[in-house]
Length: 308
Image 1 (cartoon, rainbow, N blue to C red):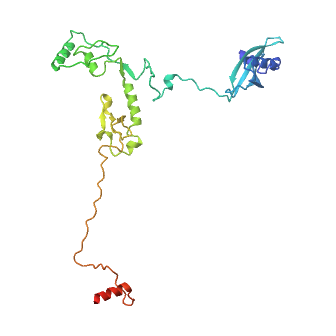
Image 2: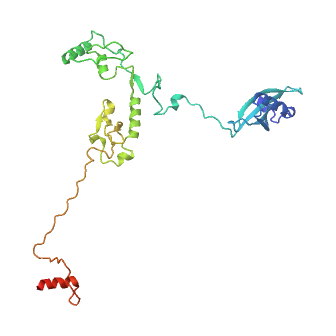
Image 3: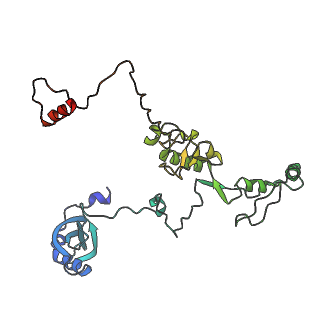
């Protein structure tokens, strides 16, 4: 039988009665007035008992002071083992610690902050280091040099700190520099896919704006193309009225500010006037008097002037 099965889970009587000893030890370890009532005990093994006391420390709701006492075999003297502050079942605990690299979110980087990149970052891969350059007397090197002389190729000045020397014209290093590959590390295929998925999720064809757009960005005059392999599916929006202005957008994205959709509607032309010249419509200046009515003073005066 194992030692765990031979131990009795019934608390030792003398250890269970040593509440005053456990309280005194807890009060000595804690600040004054933070050790509360005795709230229970548990048997840790043969002649080993842990007493729990309520913790009144602000900010430690649900925590308990635990004082463990023990007694030697055939001894009547109970001694103190340890005193610790332990969380209870309903205690408030701090969240599990997460490394900063996993806590970091887009937009957290501020002015002056440095974000170191791990050496094994899957988004990056080593750039051209010069180790693959052919020997100077090989046929490949001579051919590249002759082609460079014919085309009068220029080497972009400046180089990374890791590679301070300026590459010779016509060398593979010069070609790598022109392609942007002569850096310590460049984007890997995984890094390209991750970036493409992230950009397409924000400004892609499945967004609500693109679903209601009259056309895609591929036919918009405000789309600024980008280089590299990502240029086959993405570009930069240059329309200040678009929600994606200055952002990398998918060619399948679209919005209401499309260059060919913003056409001002033509105002409606009024109908031509209709003139009927076949009949004459009289427009009397005064209403026709009723034959049975009595003319007023003005009408009588006008009639006398007419007779005169």
